[in-house]
Length: 372
Image 1 (cartoon, one colour):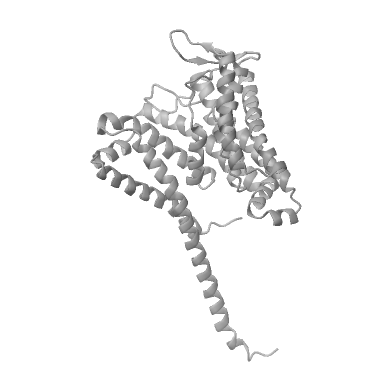
Image 2 (image 1 turned 120 degrees about the vertical axis):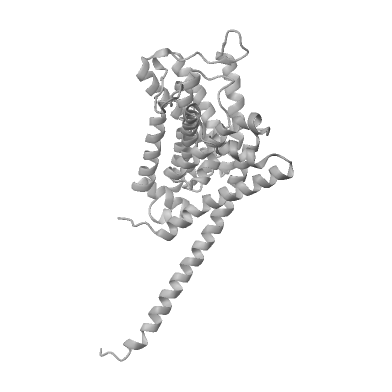
């Protein structure tokens, strides 16, 4: 059994804590410089949410968690899938279009829609994988460009199949049938709204991520390839195939991001469907250090800040965009903090090895006179 190293555990916790402290200090300094009420801002943000807000935080964290897991799959192999936002857009549209046709009864329609969404997200990611393996195009560049293309393609297709909402300028796909709409779970006492039923999907994805990457040969090969391609090749890993598989898997998971929204809230894909989830997932994956539990805590923090920001304008007289400053500072600070912690870990390890060598050297002369 693997034993927990207390030093490494403490250093791992120190990085996100340091990032949060830095974000707190920088944001407070900016508020002071612009004459905003620092105390009132933090009092509003850090106040305990009401039951309805708790449900909103859990629901948003569910979606953000799926986004971060999709990003983290690539990160574990040193692949930067910046295209999660585009992949989830394509998948959400494809899933909503399929589910709205009502070709299958309720539960089966939900299950098949999840498969369709994963296939659509995986296909959009495969384009970047093909360009990387066959043409040597950086996945960072190709996925950023594919994000823009996905936005245009989905908008164009939406206009082709859209249904106009009565009394509104909003257009959307055909609403999914009532038999496929998931009512939600009443998990928070006193709340009038409900937690997305597909929070179960997020938990399942998190467990699968942990198990596959940490307990299987495939996960070992994926991590080994990210650490050293030459070592992976020497151990028999086919690197191009692993690259394609990883990027496509990341895209397939990105396809699930919009499913809790589709089945639990919007019931169709339209111009008001939530955007920007893929980019938020990058920051959450970094903050959570690509660990399923760390990502879960980071997703809850991100959702907490988003929901609590709604009251800033009314209670503190400050624009809600101050939360964007906090989140952006956290991302910047966490990258710096992880590098500082990594260097500290290396120094501590070097000192430990030096002490052990010194102790071993001191014990050698005492044994020189021993009989052979």
